Length: 500
Ligand code: AHR
Image (cartoon, rainbow, N blue to C red; front, side, top):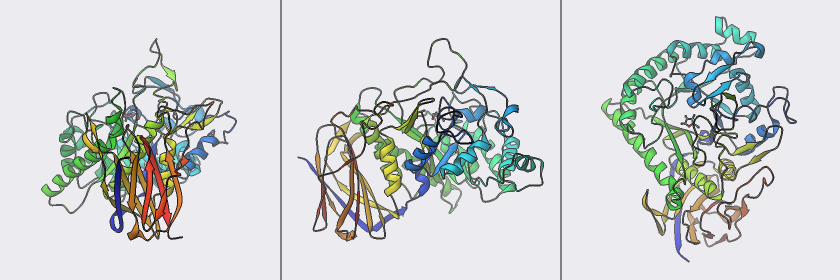
């Protein structure tokens, strides 16, 4: 059997584990909101119409921050439509997803839902069809304590200030599909003006400028450079978005998707630091990786059926994930954690039904996709400091990423507790992995779980919700400061060790 070694030292830290790495995303798209998190009349619905089964799964997922309300949707959205008495709310055309938006759920409901889910809101503003004034109005409504028209309106709606700290200045405005698509200079100027004005109300907001919607965009690099030239002193983060897929049957490349994520993050960091150098600034711009996931089964952007109907909450991109997808998601989390020194926020897109870890049926059950598990386990176990892991591994040849290590790993260390997350990205067979944990002084394996299946295409469903679940990793053995495990082909594992 091929073998790999990992060496870990608690002294070699990268950065503290950032809870905002475990963010997700709720967009008004398909059934993410309607019949996803919100379904009045459902057997589990609470007094607000929120599905309690989905709230419970969101808490189990370990989500920390939730981005809202889009996505492409936000670029044509009027936030005022979704506040106050429901009876008066207008129905609107949603151009992004070719749907009807009823506005039954809006900002007021989202903030109540966040409180119940125990998550922090991350609010995106419309810089597609709108501009500075509407962003300021939204901020006044959401955050100003009172005594002005919009803060008093919120009070009339029965709500205290929302205290939203984290704001996205638009969404994917580099994309020609975006309503209000812009050049980097047009967007950079608008983002800078908006940020400057928002900081006149609250100087300590955390603001995210839009980066590229993927590292394959024609302007990738140029977009970040031009946008940051306009906004460097005014924003805290630049965003990255990435979706990975096995669409062309190239499973070896798909399994190594985290290599692309590593390069993506490092390229954006290099570009941001270049602008920092030009400006002779000590400030470092962080990365908000506020859309990431596996997405390849349903790429339909507008209509999923004949007739091109305008419907309310149609089924859109409801990818059914398998074991291989879960291994890739686990590896993408390894990449995000490894870059904790620069990645300040990350959001798995999305939360319910739409390329999501949680699936629901209207009037029916909610269940976990296989991708739910690596996310929930990583969120639960990652703590303290992220550690560098020295990896010596056999390699895998991929057409998209070249020769890559078959084993990839990251570790965290928190007061005597060491946690290791690792993947075997090979499709060929098992690899014996020896982990030198002697410098951590750990003596007990408290938890060792594995995501793997004899059928790498196995999925969960409403009728078989637990076909794919984490299994105990029976092979884990710890002796003389060396932990030995056997990682089957296409597998992800988490190991938690302590000093008793
Ligand atoms: O998450 C689905 C869509 O993907 C989002 O609306 C958009 O920002 C991205 O292109």
